[in-house]
Length: 270
Ligand SMILES: [Zn+2]
Ligand SMILES: [Zn+2]
Ligand SMILES: [Zn+2]
Image (tube, rainbow, N blue to C red; front, side, top):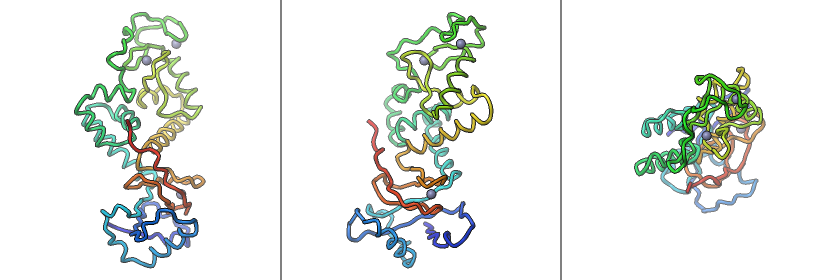
């Protein structure tokens, strides 16, 4: 395990982007509640006590987190997406919907998938539930929103088979992305909450600027829904904090030095 104290970061203009900082501490007083002054002492303590890098990583009290760059956090997410996509034989974009719903608890997802993968997909709003009656596939050639009669091949539908014309889907996605929505964009049919996978939404967005926005919102939603990740709240800071165990703790960003609480609110799904 490598430990980089990053203590030089503040006296240098160089941004230490590729480097993870991983801090460890054995808490011998069992005290979780430090007062705000303690954090500075804590870092001084670690920086001057290099022996601590050998701290027992199985110690449940260990103060352990990592500061990830945008790229590094993307890599963490992509790995989990690929695991779930392969296990469930779904596309990466559908795997993301499942992961978001289950807070990226991969082992829990894999367990549930053993009992029923169709239930898993409908719980995650990625597939219609079996109890739900599917719309008949493009039986009429009329768009349910604008009521225009269109060619069959210009009607698009999610797996729920609610068909609408491309122009209406485009409008729907454009408005919602402009509103700051990412993962939460769902089907246009009334009472249908099926989520739109990102590979369905992206081609419908006009212009690179809006696509970039959407990708940023998705990333935000992925990180916020992940039980081990949190965005650094520092101004314009792209760092993502990764913790081993999701419990409340004070963390410090290695890039902007913001000190904040890791919010362990997201825990189990059920
Ligand atoms: Zn339409
Ligand atoms: Zn629908
Ligand atoms: Zn930061």
